[in-house]
Length: 276
Image (cartoon, rainbow, N blue to C red):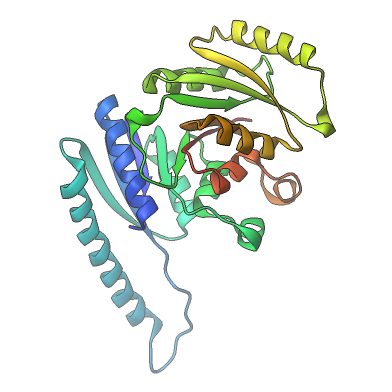
């Protein structure tokens, strides 16, 4: 976690994400890249307000606003951590995704308000979209979170034994925070399995990936999403680590994503990693 990207619109969640990223960078000896994306408004040209003239003024004002806030954030929270500030123009989601791919980013830290109701169903938050498409791990958080506060990490899983890449990432994350790992299997009516079978698989899973400082839990609920939410509420976990399949289009609309549901509805930080 040496090169950490923080997309920043200067909202409170974005500022909290920056503060968290600075702590991570200080501990890892890394740097934080603050990125502000300016989306240009779509306008029709007219005699009274030529489009080009408006865009020039808009860009100038937005750039000045961003640079002023960058300076304030760096002076208040950066300390001895290396901070790079950049401004991009275009679509927020695609600009962030392209920046990650082109600049050897290792971790994205994003603040989020979450998305609810029809907005969640049809649009989703920018953070949710990055979670679904980012080629590198993403940490999404809603409020002020200290790195030192992360001591219990929940890891919902299907217990497949062919998750080598994911498990390397999760174990490195656990080691970085010095946290206990709580492997969670949610048993649902639609995919009900006997406890004796699941317990056997959980033990095999822990042995296969040589887990340390961990617990194994079977939790019964109506859906995987509800099971994860209720388990988090019961255990008061400090972070959730989970995979996302990065579904898009109709497939995403029909099947949804547990990771995106977690980003929208859970209050604790969510670490995600996209797998094939």
